[in-house]
Length: 238
Image (tube, rainbow, N blue to C red; front, side, top):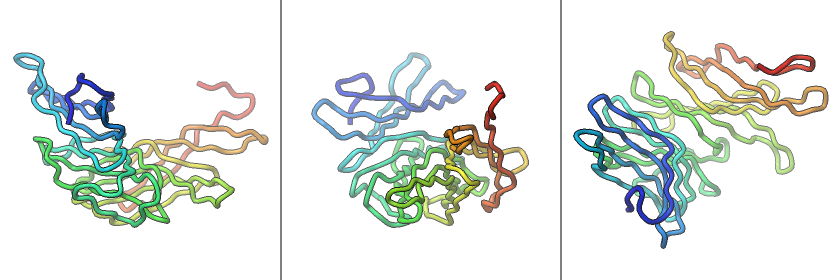
């Protein structure tokens, strides 16, 4: 591995701080002699002085880049990113396929030890996963977008996947409202449902317009409502 601030290139993409005076840093990086990117997690102590307690890297034979991470109910963390590695320690393909960069989940404990690491890839849903949240039953919802078009035609739909506490796929769904939709994030609401944020691209007066998208689903993935916030001709953008 390598230390944060040492030789090579490193980027911090997420930070999670606790009330007892420590923070977890998540990112990706590579050393001077290494052309491949790896995930890393680091624990930073803030009291009585600021110092790194530990740094650990996670990666396979090719690029592994972290997008985001969340704390989990057992005190550990789940990291979400993408990988082009053909083989990864403890990796399991959930939905099949090794033909391109695939979403990668890495679950670690409080000391940074890998509990499991799994990819999500398939002919049906290999798309880009960008958001994740933990469920009350300790499973996870993942959201993103996937191009379901032909070789010469792009047709993006919003996708939602549910995985078990061990990262095994339970189901995957796609949602289409007539444009190109994708999701960026997902959060639980006080009603127990899930709110998804993203975007949609549509043709308006022969021009492509991209606007925010909000969608609420229940825990079974059934849509409750979906809304676009499109600026129409004559309106001003707020």
